[in-house]
Length: 68
Image (cartoon, rainbow, N blue to C red; front, top):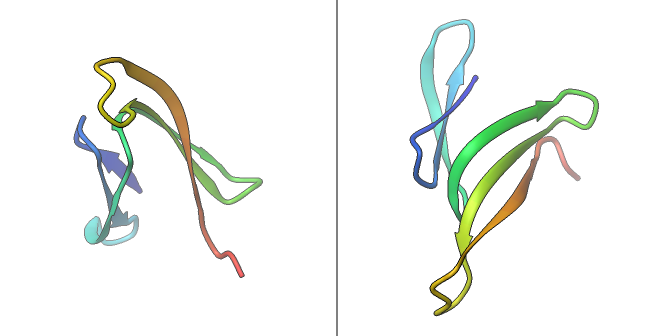
């Protein structure tokens, strides 16, 4: 199970025990997350600042699991 704190942290929990097992850091502040079961990938819709730009950009971050 994956939860986000509205900033850039994703907390990962063991679904059967509901215990935190590790934490991931995204590049931007997480707005929404989706799990793609077919690709075994977590998609995070994030707000990202690039370099010194005052603008905030909306982007997708892909987090892959079980990669070789």
